[in-house]
Amino acid sequence: MSGVDERAPYDPMPHGPPEVGVGPWEGPWPEDERYDVRLLAEGDRRNVVDRYRYWTVEAIVADLDTRRHDFHVAIENWQHDFNIGTIVRTANAFLAAEVHIVGNRRWNRRGAMVTDRYQHVRHHSDVPALAAYLHERDVVLLGIDNLPGSLHLETTTVPRRVCFLFGQEGPGLSESARAACDGTFSIAQFGSTRSINASSAAAIAMHAWVREHADLSDERAWRG
Ligand SMILES: C[S@@+](CC[C@H](N)C(=O)[O-])C[C@H]1O[C@@H](n2cnc3c(N)ncnc32)[C@H](O)[C@@H]1O
Image (cartoon, rainbow, N blue to C red; front, side, top):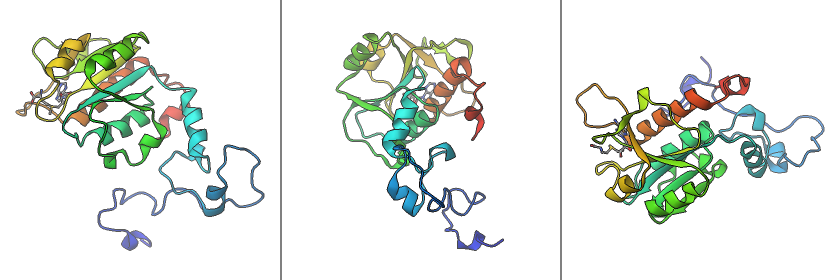
């Protein structure tokens, strides 16, 4: 049980290794410009998969850019929605093409856990501007909200080139967003609550895309 007592009570991974990552590089340093000399010298304790140990942020982003998926995610940010950071983190995990923030530029990065460094995050002043940006690139804009008339995410095939747009806690998708979307999808619910949390809805929608379109034959998808 050594090490367990040393952990802080709020440790989010109480059953994982006491320290993630690797220590300083042992042996002759690799001659590859993807490596970061400071990380080689001091070790790499970042929250990145092992394949990227000791790589610079720029090298990791460049590698991700070679295989990003065709889906985007967007969220309205009129009230500094605290879900945005979590959505960015999930978008990073599922390798979204881009994350779009509509409305206020400022957003709470805490939930992103630094994943925003590896993700293309783009700002738009309003939803029509987002829709114009996407349509120029042949990307369909689908609002995700439990609105009357929404199609069911569970029984409809999501397009490959798509952007999922989420509303905020409380108001949900704005009128302007509903008008600018090419369609809306809802997620089935069975309990008493009116809705689920926006970042939970985002994870479900992104995963619907993954189930439909992602290449699961690449073993890197299963490394956890
Ligand atoms: C907490 S909900 C907001 C309001 C919701 N329309 C209501 O009637 O209470 C915040 C956002 O989460 C997403 N969301 C929550 N539950 C959903 C569901 N069952 N289906 C689709 N999206 C949902 C939507 O993007 C929504 O705008």
